[in-house]
Length: 121
Image (cartoon, rainbow, N blue to C red; front, side):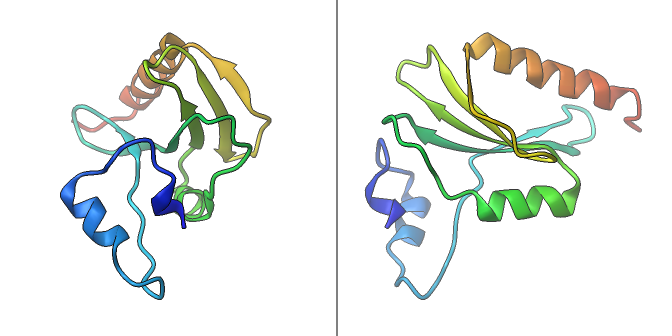
């Protein structure tokens, strides 16, 4: 089960929901970019500690993003965060690429700037 491969121990609630029997499915959303004024969700992210793995389950994140009409990404990170392996999940599945953390920061800023053109706050 995924709960056995995490980089570090989660918070108490995450540890609790991971201890539930396997017939109860639950997951935590790793990261949601939001507008800092109106709190509209802008993008969903699934993250994982980078152990050179080639896969992480992203079905629920992808489905939520599709239903909300949001972009979504899978991000593998190292510690300290000096590089990221990123794969766009929605709206179009793309090949993985390696980026620097500041590139992701610029993407966060662009999401906010693009949203501000239509933000109602």
